[in-house]
Amino acid sequence: MLWITREQVLAGRRSTAWYQLDALARSRDAATRLRVAKNPSAQTDALWVLSRDDDAEVREQVARRTDAPKKLLSKLSQDSSSDVRAAVARNETTSAEVLRSMAEDPHHGVRFAVQASQRQRRRAADERAEAVTEREAELDEQDDERGRGAAAAQPLAATA
Image (cartoon, rainbow, N blue to C red; front, side, top):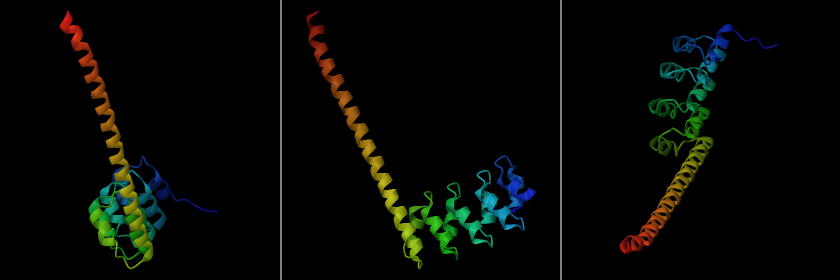
């Protein structure tokens, strides 16, 4: 049977106050700290504390957070755990500069995650550019239609 402590329950609740999460981030219990790392209500101070955690799984959870500060992700990109570094590479908010610095990582899993992230970003940029081009074409077509309508209405105004 798995027992969950009161601390773990508090650490996992979205409604737990930020100052309680900050205190729970310093708990002796790794499961509690992991729940804080996963909690979307945990704020930057708690994330910085957790980024120095002895447990690599806790640091990995911090690296996965899209609300983690870029400076924190940059720090975690140099973590001793390849799982943490790979999580940084897969994080969509990791800067392109950090990704470039991680491209030569000694661990193949991290390099693979960097390449996958870069491909995903290129694909997303291409999709955005395509959407902009389509929207511009629609607007041009609407302008052309308005122009034809105004030109057709002009001769009627001239005869009146």
